[in-house]
Length: 258
Image (cartoon, rainbow, N blue to C red; front, side, top):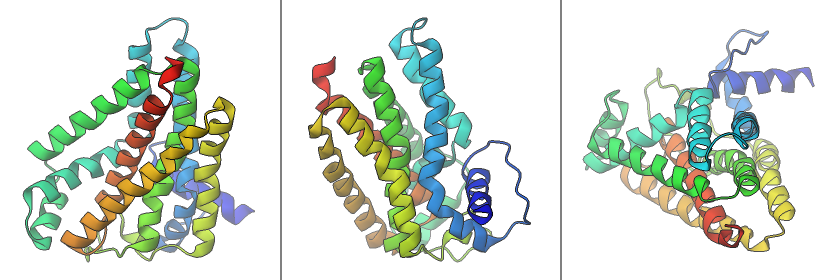
């Protein structure tokens, strides 16, 4: 139990900006194993977002609440996943060879593709959330934060890490994950979504799963075709796109609530 708690803290230390201390020295192998708790990190991020909704629901317009929820999620993670999405947009938008794509994605500067992609992504999140009633908005957050991270984690399970740079921030998780890791991650990633679907009495929200599978299939195929696998930036991009798709599904499939 102590070991698992240590892995959870390691996951929080790597995937968020929260002040977390670990009792053991940094170990790449521990970080690799801590990846199983990436969806649990989504629970923490979602909790901060729900706190914003709870605090402001009776004193601020819906649009402002939705915007502040997005801001809080960025603050908690340090824009970790948004940075990956922007880098992937730049790399796949401006590169035509594996080497060029990886070179562009490694560049810390943001380009036109990254800027426009991030702008459209945030706008889609914002509009989707602000169109939902407060209760459904909260359910969407509870579902999206863990499930989107689990979707990204499945890329690690099925794809190959392609960077050889030992300094890459995603290098420690390049060894992949085991079946046990996947099952633990699936529990933390899928359970909140099923619970929210049950709470809302909207079985049509289960169509979110096929939508996620389609977008995951497309992104995995794109990565495999152009660079032969994934990078840390690709994982961030998958998480962001999956989160946005979940919000869209809650907005479109739950339109009768509005």
